[in-house]
Amino acid sequence: MAWLRTSYNQKVGGAFCVWGATFAGFREFVYLLMMADKPSKLKIADREFTSRLLVGTGKFASNELMRDALIASGTELVTVALRRADLSGKHDPFANILDFVDPKRFLLLPNTSGARNAEEAVRLARLAASAGLPTWIKLEIHPDPRYLLPDPVETLAAGEILVKEGFTVLPYINADPVLAKRLQDIGTATVMPLGSPIGSNRGIETRAQIEIIIEQAIVPVVVDAGLGAPSHAAEAMEMGADAVLVNTAIAIASDPVRMAKAFKKAIEAGREAREIGLADKLNAAAATSPLTGFLRR
Image 1: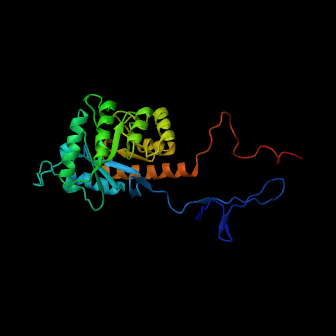
Image 2: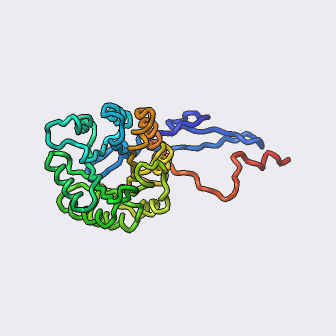
Image 3: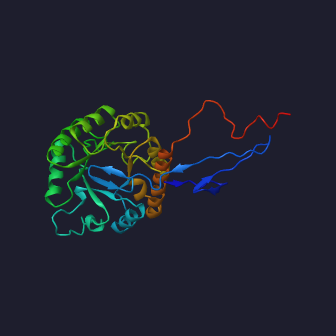
């Protein structure tokens, strides 16, 4: 353990102490502030990750820019749409995104984006596994091309099949606490409720439902979709989410590399604040300096 240094401090016997005084007569008081040496790690299935930021690979102006942003973000888990990847091994120059995702640095998370039902999603997952990609799969099924909202019935059906076949399944879902619990019960490795529709950048519009999912969770909760600003990611972490997935907000930024760094910092700050504990909200004001004592004669 390490002692947290504060603005006015003095090291005493290996601990940092804060000294203060009152106007009524000098009197010392001591706060001993303690925090962990290192933030806790994210554990999904049998893997541990230092970063709690998952990053997508769509919408970048170039694969080179995508590669640089991934590195800057500090992520260790990168999702790639299978329909954009060359699984033939022939290095198709028009579908060569996998050439820019270093498997030694990142765990590749294939996703079934574009699948309209459970059958299509399962077929894509099997295709990825047969091509030698990790058997980790981000399960996405959204038949509606306008709002891209996930299909709960088909997602549960596909999840059951893929879990039984040995896949590590990370399902993208609406912020539905009942569905989240059902998916956990069948053995998915996470649940990934949306904050708002994919690519909308509207932030966490489903806060109340996500809070219920977090409360009931027995697997990591990853807030996925709609996070458009680093502050949205920090909010998710402060709520108690285990991780977030970001794509559009980084990819379409005027400087994706700097934006990736901004999300990295926001997630670290939000998680640290959650672990320390946020101050309680009050209905009335509470003075930061005492209003009594020094006024007495």
